Image (cartoon, rainbow, N blue to C red; front, side, top):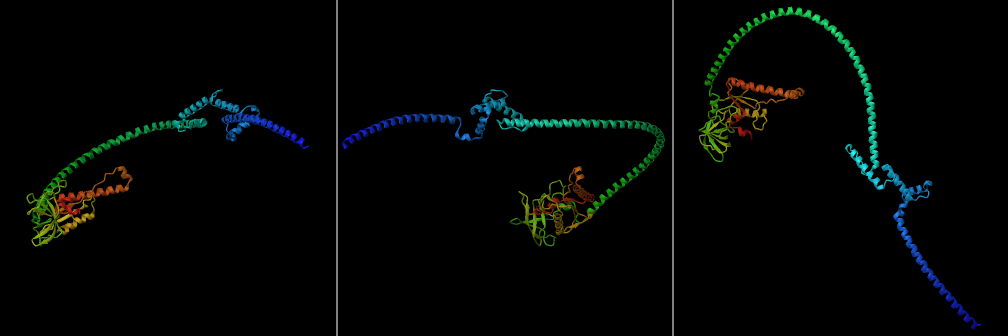
Amino acid sequence: MAAVSQPGSRAGLITALVIFVVLFLVATVLFFTANADLQVVRKTNTDQQVKYNQVIKQTEMTDPDYQALQELQRDPANRGRSMFDIMKTQRDDLAKAITGQANTPAAKATELATSTVQSVNKTLEPAGAAIPAGSLNNAIMVLAAAIVERQTQADQLKKQMVQCSEDLKKQTALYQKELDTHRVTVEAARTETKTTQEDTTKYRAGKDEQLAGLEKTLADTVEKDRKALEDLNTQLTARTQEIDKLKLDLEKCHAAQARFKVAGTGESAIRRADGAISNIGKNGVVYVNRGLGQQISTGMTFEVYDKNEGIPRMGANDEALPAGKASIEITRVSPGSSEARIIKQSPGSQIFSGDLIANLVYDPNVKFRFKVFGDFDIDQDGKATPQETDVGKRRIAQWGGIVTDDLNIDTDFLIMGKEPVVPVIPPEQLKDDPIAEFGQKKAEEARKAYDDVKNKALDLHTPVLNQNRFLYFIGFFDQARK
């Protein structure tokens, strides 16, 4: 049994092995065949995926526009149509809506839309209502709004025209009524005028008689007045002759009085030296020949003039100021002489022994009487004040002069401050500005008072000096500015 079963087992084993080999070969062939088919399928699938992605991406399938297309595709009217066909139809409908023509290419429709927007912008630019480029919808909306606005304006104008027409009719009726009333008034006026003319004729006849009587009375009065005027002219001639004689007598009196004054004033007093430089010291120090007992004091100033040229004339206000070689100030008084310091010296000038010194206020024998009027600008800052006028008055009193309140025959000098200026203000401004009117009135009063004092001094033959000329004649011009 064992010998018989062993060969059978071997044969079965071989048979099984053969079957296994055959099955393996078949499986191998099937594997390679299936793998080849799988490669073909994969390649086909890859190509399809590429084409599919070119049409639509996976992420775009969730877009609301894609879902809207799906809804349109489910519509029975679009049954069997592809999404591409539906989108193409929508594009053609949009192009037709833009151009108004069927079968218009999309590029052509876009070009026409762009051109339309540009044209609309050119129209709207002057009104400042231009729209963004390419926005056809905005262009339509802006134009629609403009049309509605124009229509609204047209409706309003129509209503205004209707209202104006009604107002014109009412105004015409009113004018017609007034015209009728005016016609009645004119007729009444004509009637009244006729009556007035008749009354005027009668009145004129009566007045002509009265006028003839008045003319005669006037002629008699004129003749009477003419004779009275001749008598007045005769009296005026006699009074004029008396005035001329009185003026001549007054001149003689002034001349006689000048002779009897102690020192005399005017040019002689001004041009008379009050001393001389006796010696020249060092470091800007000089000595004068006036000392104790001669009414000279420390702080007094003098103007120094050349001994050969002398002291200049008083001159008028518009002439050159009487500046000398230098100005000096007395610093120490001794018996027979005084020491002084130079406070100002003209460029290029030199002081010599014998040069003259002058101070209009100073005189060892006479106390001159000064009338000071107006505001002074002692420090030359362009502003005249009463306080600076007091400075000048104090100098006169300190240096032996007498400051008087009155201007009369005994006054030796009149010193005038700055001349008041009357502002020029247009009449219309004065009318609306009471403060300016008051200021101008005060300035006019000050100017009149200034002129009155000056004219009175001229009538009295009193020498008149302005502020600057006075300061030079007392050697105090430059000192006052410090």
